[in-house]
Amino acid sequence: MEQAQRRDDRWIQQMRNAWRNEQQAQQQLQQDEEAEEWQRWDEQRDLLQRQLRMENITNNTSRQDIEGYLRW
Image (cartoon, rainbow, N blue to C red; front, side):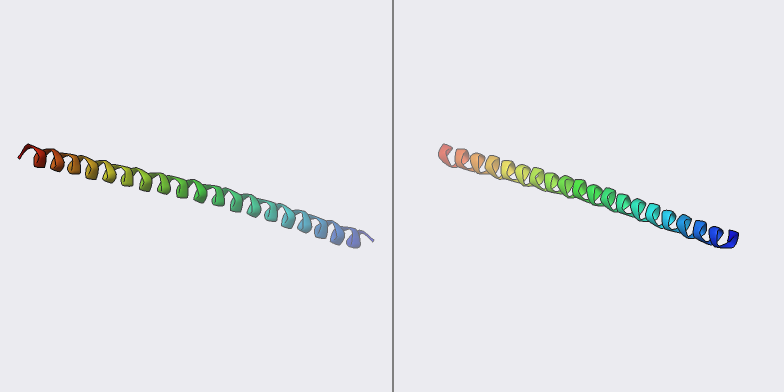
């Protein structure tokens, strides 16, 4: 009887451990996904900033070219 109780207790403990491990794995996965999402947002923001800088440079260069042409 005691042996059966110990076996049942071990099984219950193993199930609790498995459940806890699964919960921790799910939480880690969610944290990893959130971190990846933030990284994608950062990369997208950086790309948009680079594009804006390039547009500004192009616009300034074009403006200077036009002004130089009009002066001739």
